[in-house]
Length: 395
Image 1 (cartoon, helix red, strand yellow):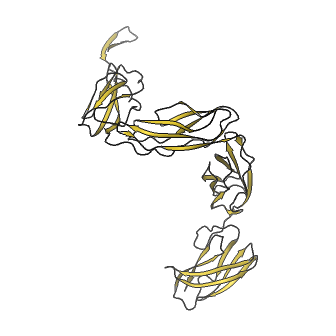
Image 2: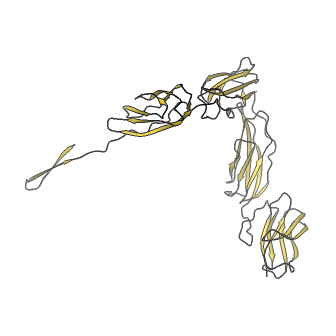
Image 3: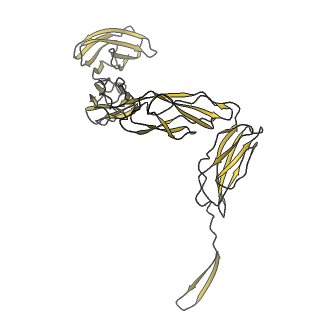
């Protein structure tokens, strides 16, 4: 609009100036997701819709070649002909001043029935002590216009679908007294027919799972390591919950009976790993395992971190560099036979000896007088432990 600014000085003199101020129009935001089938058959009609956009007074729909329909509202009914190959159905929100950005959905001409639906997700063991509901889903697929769900098997009372029919997820009611002998079944549908079905058995439980068995995995680790811990599957369990103390973190596998634990964030020399099994009736008693964590891992002479399980450490060679002979020293926590190898830079084994080591520090002389000058790698290992390696220079 036009505005006037008047200024008056101390003597009473005045001056006025006029100006025009214009404001940039505020356009509506892009609409949300367009709901509707991802494909149409020749001659098929379908409805696409969006949620209302705040501030919008109408909507502009644009259609790909081979699709007809008109609307200025939040939904549009369209029909396809043989000219449709693949394209986009788009919509913009409009207000009194401008149009907002478009939201689009890809659609194509459907020429075959859907493929088999993906894996059904949801609880495979349900608690029948009280009535409850469970949700079962399959992944969305582009060649499906809807999904047909059903319950198979015999149970009185039995499972019933209470909502979601036609979508990729349904809610199923589980009654008290369900016998655990039914399956949830689903197949995808489009205008060319029905895809192959998939089903999921739904068993019953009347109590929480029993305590898991012993946790398998290393009892002592280096802070630098990531280690795997696991338990045997627990009957009637649908998921597992793991915890670890001492600053370590679970990096993968939560919810399953096997997890990977990273100890590189550990702040304590002791970490407690615990796991509980669960189902719809509750959680089991926890099973625990205490893990000793070495917070001061050794460094090899080539400044690479040495990983170990407190079985082999403190690996050194003297002199280094050497003109031929050297003494290899290392510390072990268990008396056993260990393998000592010297390998050149292209992987050839120059020395391969078995050392009968005792608990504590051990030394073994090696002779490299007959090898070429250069860099070699000395390693000490034992089956079931991590490899200790250092660099040795022969001059």
